[in-house]
Image (cartoon, rainbow, N blue to C red):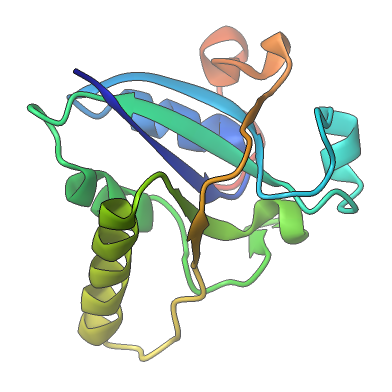
Amino acid sequence: MTETATFAAGCFWGVEERFRAIPGVEDAEVGYTGGSTSHPTYRDVCTGTTGHAEAVRVTFDPQTISYEELVTAFFALHDPTTRDRQGPDVGRQYRSAIFTESPAQEQTARAVLERLQAQRGDHRQIVTEIAPATDFFRAEDYHQRYNEKHGRASCAL
């Protein structure tokens, strides 16, 4: 039986690609979550006015990879210390966030964040938001597996 996890770490094209490469991840799709507009489009989200983050919903086999391992991978694939930006991508839609599906996921995400913060040598604060999952709106088809179809994207990763 599979489980889902939702992460936001900047531009979703590269994040999706990197999650897909992790053994135990059965699927990853890009979309929008954490905002107030119903059924936003990419154009809507890019305005920064919907409150949504570009996010990746990961379907995984917990017998192969644990949620804790996915959260740890999430923190390794982006800079969780930059608020509302990753590289050249700036705005609330590019925030670092974990959208939890259950109290157990929330507890695990917070524990990993606290552990990693304690391990940081530079003492920069991790600003990743941890919030309950809200509606996930799948992005337009042309965004799905974008890097596979078009080669490396210009998103910062």
